[in-house]
Image (cartoon, rainbow, N blue to C red; front, top):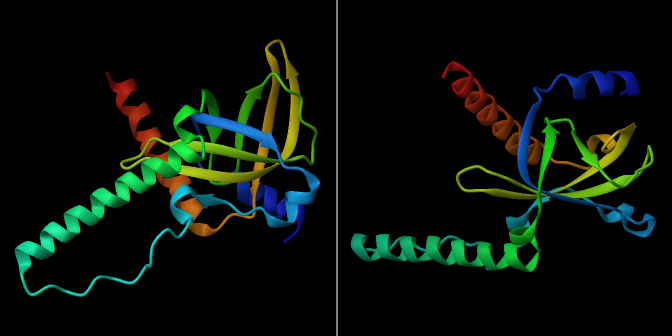
Length: 177
């Protein structure tokens, strides 16, 4: 796909401003070949085989409930280990194609950055996404950074698009009041 076609496709996504847990870092050159967007839960922690169907339906429901509680505990511990529970909040402009944010730090066009962010969904979605800096604009408060996502599966894009539409509905409700 030509670069101008790719840019047009990226700009075709709906965009929204949001205040979310968010932090970025520049990806060192030696790590660039290994980056791939993922959710925090993408790390296999247990054998993914499904439990056999239990004859006792009540016991089966209890096992399912305990399993979901264990999943929640594992996700919370993973979130803490990866630093998601202490991310600072930031204003971002996000779409399925990329994100924009203000920074005191100057990035260069072409830099690859890792963004850790949490989409406030039910349940929250913690993501590692990778972006290429496509624009840097100096402002009175620092720098406006515009990026496009790189190395991202459709499932991650879908999570972001779901969040964007959810946020757009919230904004429309607020405007009607």
